[in-house]
Length: 169
Ligand SMILES: [Zn+2]
Image (cartoon, rainbow, N blue to C red; front, side, top):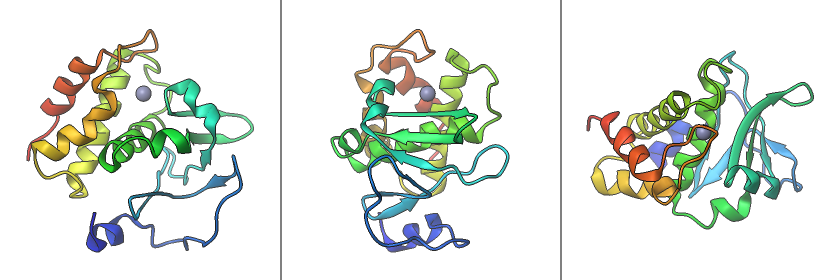
C-alpha cells in the first residue's frame, strides 16, 4: 500500500494521534500495513474501533450496536496480525459494512453477509488496494477456510465466488 493510497484513506477531518491505545480503548482509525482505515456508520458517525481479544468470539472481528457504545467495531489485535495485510483490510471493511450499510436489515442472514463481503471487496478495488486476481485472493483468504455459520456466513468457497462476482477490474 503506497502513500497515495494512504492519503486517500486517512480522514482529513481529524488528526491521527500518536501513541499506543490502551487495551480495549477505542480508536477512530486502525493501522493496517501503514494505511489508516476508518469507518463511517450508516448515519454518518465515525465508528469507534475497540482493540480487544474478545473479538475472537466473532472469529477475529465483529461489529454491532448497543446502547453503551452506539455503533462499534471490535477487532482482535492478535488475529489481525496473524493474517496478511490484504486479508486484514478485508476483515475490517467487512465489519465496517455491517454498520455502514443500513443497520439491522437482514442482520445475521446470508444476504447481509454476502452484501458485506461485496461492499468490502468493492471498497478495496475502489481504493486501489486490490488491482488483480492475486491481490483479490490474498484479501479473500481471510474467509477461504471458514466453514460457514448459522449467523449467516456461507462456507468459504461460496463467499469467494460471491465476492469475485462483485468485482470488475
Ligand atoms: Zn459479517
